[in-house]
Amino acid sequence: MQQRYVGNSGLRVSSLSLGTMSWAGETDEQDAAALLHTFVDAGGTLIDTAASYAGGRAEAMLGSMLNDVVARSEVVISTKAGLTTSGARHSVDTSRNALLSSLDASLARLGTDYVDLWFAQAWDPNVPLDETLAALEYAVRSGRVRYAGVSNYSGWQTAKAAAVAGFPLVASQAEYSLLQRKAEAELIPAVEDAGLGLMAWAPLGRGVLTGKYRGHIPADSRAAQSKLAAYVEPYLEGSSSSVVEAVAMAAKGLGRSILDVSLSWLLSQHGVATAVVGARTPVQLKEILDATLAPLPPEIAVALEDVSSPA
Image 1 (cartoon, rainbow, N blue to C red):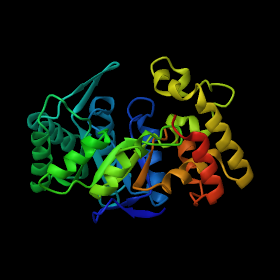
Image 2: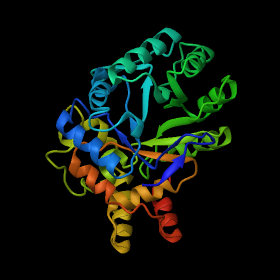
Image 3: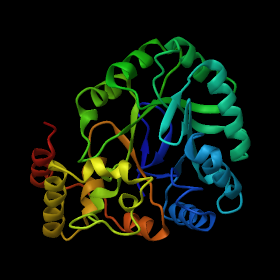
């Protein structure tokens, strides 16, 4: 698997990252171990998690596998703090106390004395940005965090954070795919100008860009589950279907899978360091790892950009 530098930093990560949002929920320990082992065997290095995933249980599950399923030295771990979830409600707190307390808890669950990349998971309008950034800087200077970044920040928020931070931020996390190109308007220019690398989450349009929802909703999919359907539904309506059909047509002409075309397009975009794939099962991960991830012919890329262009 290709290795890339994150922005202007010396941090190198795999072009695909393994997301763990489903761990300890949809994905049980046996499948998670298989996912981790298969991903690392394929050359993957970056494992992305968060304190908010399954109330910390995803981190704990990953921690239980370090130095057992894979060696700690073989992986780059990124985690996030500042966001808690209760049902469908989200609560943001990126104060110094909340962030550093969350980091201590994350390290304990992961069973490691440092994480490679740590994010403030969301913008907090109630906490001074300087306080949030100071907490990130303290974590880096204390050695518990190697690199830091911001997640789900808008373009101007990212630019401001990078400008006023007393140390170099290296990464930004945001949703980005052929079905969600909002990042191109302001975020990606801000990321490139500040020398950050973009970690694109939901690069397969929350699963829709695999093509599995064409014409029906599979019984074992997220869209078929009452608790998770709202996550997928925005991309099952309107212009999204036209985009998926265009990708399917391109894939057929190229002799490649729909997800291969989708990921290949994304990984060729400016500023993208890695795509965070949230495979829930070993079968899904195999389909992703079988992708060629080769650059698309220019005329195909332009056609897909035309049909998926935001209104």
